[in-house]
Figure (cartoon, rainbow, N blue to C red):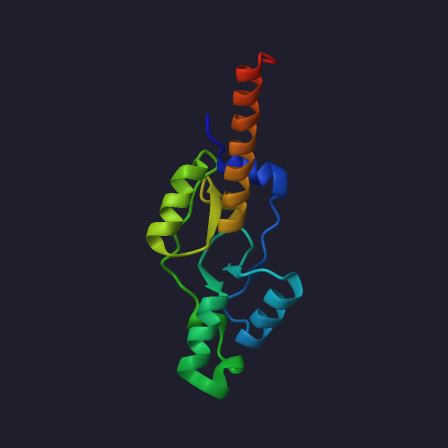
Length: 146
């Protein structure tokens, strides 16, 4: 059985960096830099998902608006077409969604409420862990140590 998003959240924790839609892009950039992360979930209440703001969104807004970018609001730059997943989503399904959609962060919802976020790095780590375990099991089987 493959890893699920629930397993990733159990390992990394359920903390999600959020930002309100009326905050400025300067505040968003500061928060991304402070936390050393690539995306913020846009949420007025910390539990619902209104959008997502990634580093890529900030760069695109900077290219479009130039020097006025820091004063713009998160709502003006966020992506509202947010792909989400649930705790039972497998890492294979998530990797496929991220690759096809060309995005690197997916909020995790349970009964419509935000319970975590998974990055492409989390998916890669989970897959490497799976392959390492499978390799060890195969080696044990072949050498008779199983």
